Amino acid sequence: MESIYALVMQIIMQYGTRDPFEIAECLGIYLKVADIGRQQGFFRYIDGVPCIFISSRLNMFQRILVCAHELGHYFLHSDIAKESVLREFGMFNMKDVIENEANVFASELLLDEDELLEHFEEGYTVFQAASMLGYNINLLYIKLREMNNRGYDFDLSWGNSELF
Image 1 (spheres, one colour):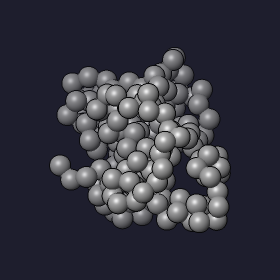
Image 2 (cartoon, one colour):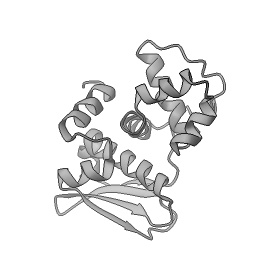
Image 3 (cartoon, one colour):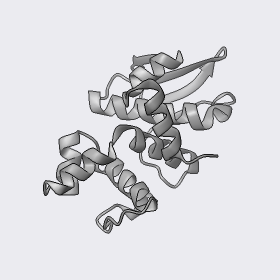
Image 4 (cartoon, helix red, strand yellow):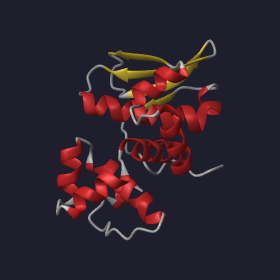
């Protein structure tokens, strides 16, 4: 399997956007924002149609993150989703391989490397950059970890190692 980074870059080029809602629409994925209880979102197939459900209790940034995460399941785990529902109660369960991959997909899709590097060059801390971008610090941690895997050298000692 190609790297998640390469897959995401291919998707961004193909659809001309990082917006997971636009990408889902282009793919014909049924997308519904509704009250789904404690769940943040889930991905499944209903009568052969890929479907993403997102909690109406989430703010817009959280909805974007959940949509990107569920889109990751669509691209990476459709075979599993055809057999069962992939449910999200907490976004950053990184000990589960499937959830880790979906979170990596979301971080690569939502966080542009050049924009991050620009924030750091301007002197912003990781926490300030996450706040400015509107995303959870854990998403930024995942992105920086992936960037380190591609040759960068960010100090990630501040991160939550209990997640992994």
